[in-house]
Image 1 (cartoon, rainbow, N blue to C red):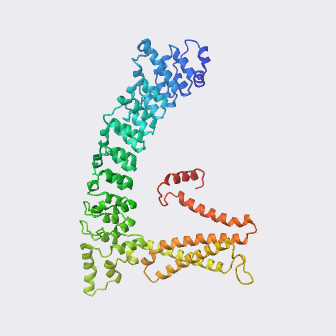
Image 2: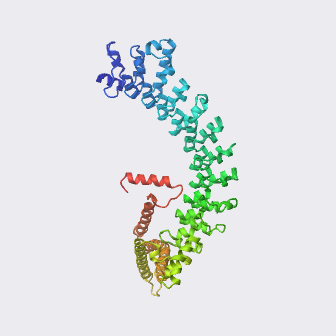
Length: 599
């Protein structure tokens, strides 16, 4: 392309057009993408330049000339979102059509034929405008040809689907409210649109679609899921209510695996959705999947502790707590198999739970639990206590055959092997591998060392009062609030550190298994002792430097900074404790710190 022509189109230099000879070739294209001068003018939103090109009878046909991507200037206008240029193009075609020389000049029959021209991806200009969220351009094209709404691109996506998937609710509502007869409500289009509306929590659009096609509540997609499955997946209570209105039978529709919306909600831990489904369909709790698993089974598998607690607290669901799946496993069996220790403890404490229930292999939950390698903790010990003595026949026979018979014929047997079946206590070599034992022992030693250090420091600080003593032996700053804070925090640090030492001492005569139970408790008490010691230090410094407000506050500020940094590191750590509702703020702060190279 002539460089002067390109520059004129990019800058909107109309004088260039007036200066040029009428025989000048305006049909030149760029080397790589084969863009015409009109493509370039549209790209830079030069409206007046476009008008001048279209006013010329010799160059107006550039409006239909595609580039190397088969994009017409309509596609470019749709991509950049210039509604004025889009309207100009539509008006130009309408004028040609009105004059009756559109076929002679451009070789097309109508405006509809022009607007339905597609690029290499089989996108019309409307598809491009919707994908980029340009509402005014979309409005211009659809009002000119409502039939565009029924066309799909190379990915089999209609404009409505693209609006939904892109989250452009304004465009989608515009389609549904103003052109319902032009939309394909027969099959895949409406299914995809409704699914996208549910995924993006666009309740107004869900209402419009359901009003137009109520039977879509019970229609399934290619994986066998209904709209209700997706609402349950995302825990959208309002959408679930809309879908359940007038057609509660949709809740009983199962996919290829026999999964109902109730199973999905239970698996994801959406208690409010489960409650709504149970209220609308009182007998839906009896629904099982192809493995004969109830909502309790799937909640246990996914580790939904709150959901399990909620189910156990519902009187109407008492009958399904001990239901067995295809393999004969109860919820307790599955909790053990999937190592959901907190849920095991919850189920084992429930009075209605059959702890001695056996699966198809004649194993109880305790049989499986006792042969699984686990990191030792107080929770594991608690589970042993709750489930002890509930052995199935195979486990009992194995113990008799390998242990009891040897004892009866006089062969020596370890006391730990003899007692294991009935006590549930595992000794070092039966409970964990040597690496885990070594790590835990090292951790216990560190706990003891830190606790002893804190106890020593705080004990000494208790008899070395900040500010010294009066002649009568009482502390100099007895009535000072900061001094009282020092005494309180120092006492807390001392008591908690000594308590940690005492726990280590009290359990030292027992097995490694017993000692490791209290490691978590020791960690918590040491943490409290460390924080209390820091606050005691800050309070003591405040007492000593009371004459200088600035210096006296330095220690408090530093302690506050330490705690802030500690909790900030915990807050942004992607593998730290999950707290509902804080995932997005945590992700935002983490990305911000990473962006500035802080972490």
